[in-house]
Image (tube, rainbow, N blue to C red; front, side):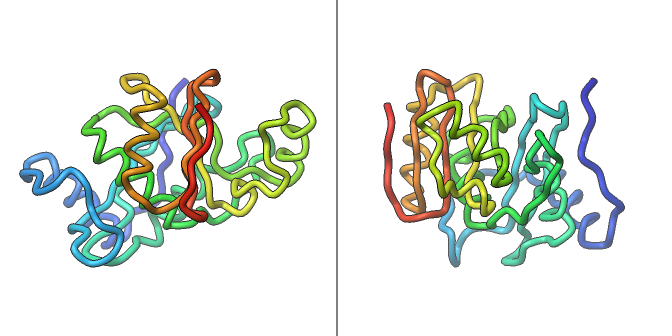
Length: 189
C-alpha cells in the first residue's frame, strides 16, 4: 500500500502548493540552478521509498528561503526505515539532489534507498559489506543513495558531478548513486 507523507498546512505550505501548481505552467529558464543567488524561485524534491511505500513531492525552498514545515516532512521521509529514527537532513544535500534531478530533465521521482542511517544501522551494514564507511555521512544526515528507473547510474552520477558541490559515488552493481554534501570527490564504477 502506498501512502504519502503529509502534514497540516500553514500559509507557507499553501504557498508551496500554489508554487508547485504554477511550476508546471512556467517555462524552464535553465535546467540547472546555482546553489547561491540566482538559484530560481523554487526547489523541489520528488522521491519514492520502496521500504515504506511513501512518496514525497514537495517544494522545500521558495524565494530564497527554506520552508521549515517541508524540511520536517523531508526529515521524516528520509528517516532510518529500519528503526524509524529521524535526523535533520542537511539542506546542502537536498540542493544537490534537486539540482541533479533538474539537470536530468525527468519527471519521475528518485527512489530513495538510504537517507539517514542511525549508528546502529550503519554498524550492521558495515558488518555485511566492506563498502560502508565507518563514519558515513548518512549518520549525520548529509547523504542519500538514489536511483532513477529511466536513467543509468552513470547518467545520475554525471548530473550530480556537474553540480560541483559534494561527493558522488557510483554503485553500478547495486544500481544506485550516492550524493552527499561533503568535499567534492567521486568514486566507484
